[in-house]
Length: 330
Image (cartoon, rainbow, N blue to C red; front, side):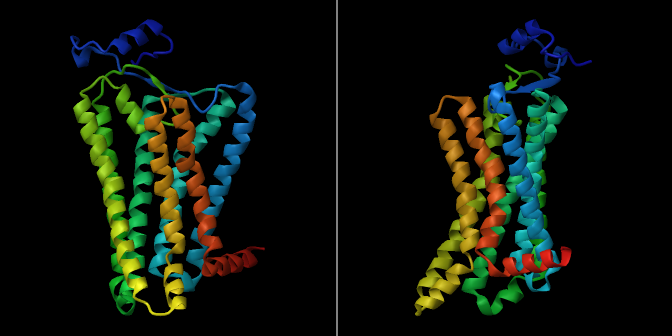
């Protein structure tokens, strides 16, 4: 039966030393982890509770409204909006993976998460986070075909290809997350049970483990290549071709109209990767893990919340679809 490390402080010291002379099968597994959260100030807890509950509701309702607007309007049954509705669905899953747990922890003043719960949260966090990245790459390819090959757009971006792109993205994400989980499941004991964040950060969990750091680094680099480098390379290549095609358009109005079709997507790409890169750089420069946790709020909460506003404010088709949807429900 698992032993609670919070009940046995001496055992916690034992785990911190990470002795290598004991066989792994003779060790007691960790049953719980402790999430430090964003702040220990009790006076800030009601403010944090209200703030994150509001942001979570706005994020879920905004993305849900995008999905309903696209599905209810036949004029929006195009590849671009098909990918957009899937991106909104991924954003709902991404925020729902971390924020409800944090809200409950603030309300109950309990920051303990079970080992199984931590592993589950980490799995879905990686799944939806990587799915966001790959869907943005698919949307960049869609804009590339629309601008560089407009006459063949409907032939190339047929429903079968769009469905295959989404299914391939989902399959790759499931494969990556399960591979990461298989590594974590092999971890027997940890240096510490305190995770300096409000959710089970995959990189921090691997750093706490008493295992071969070379294997951990290989896994993290592989995940980074699949979820970051490859999608970003595809996006950069697509926009390189897009900009080259736009510059060859003779009229200024034609250039503006062509660029306006990918303006919303480009804004979301900059927000998604810009905040992620900012969090990475801030955590690398700053020695405070708590500051890194605060910075991670940007890409886990703020970015999914802003995506519906970016697309609705910059897209008249979405605005008209939302107006028709609201007029039917009122």
